[in-house]
Image (cartoon, rainbow, N blue to C red; front, side):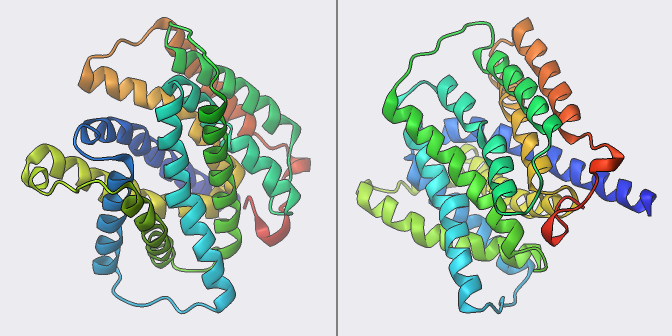
Length: 306
């Protein structure tokens, strides 16, 4: 039994680590596409690509009750359209470093919300691990040049994005625990598309189609859609099942370092010793946050954390 549990945890960690690696790389693809497309257009296109791919992968319907359907509307809003809209809009008002730091508050928001809803218990070492990881995030994001300029609107939007992701995480665990992860991801994307469409229409900007035929635009959109919004949402869903929402979301702390590492590899942007120190703190924080003593290894409601 212990071997099986360890295997599940290892699988969950691999799924979460792979997902965060891809998500950390998506910022580079989005940066290239932003030269031609608006954030809302990029968001909608990647959702459409992922949705179509998942239909081809699993061409059958998902039967839901009206209460479950309402939950998926909220999942599409909190995990797709509203999350991406608040995060991308925050970047237009405040520094990218501010957004990166504030959005990594999502794991601690998730831990508190999961505790309040009875999904998972909030443990003391979780807090210490989160604090260590957050300190590492600050070092990574600053990357040797500490610049922090507060902008109330932009920073509040980034905070809203973190809260959206926390709501999405807990709601997904409660709603989709025993449903097919491919079908639940597709239904979430469906409502993400429907709620993102008005945002694109309200912008009133023309959608350039010619760049879609170029390798750069097509390649980046396929990467964002098929991997970033298709495969990774499925793997993140399974990681929730194996690790619980709190442990899985703690991997979000790795995202800023992965983004800087990918930018160093593909864009030639420098990585400072402070960023490497930050990566070490993040790793230590993840280890501390995930450590559970035998007396605390008691599942919460619905078997969360098993």
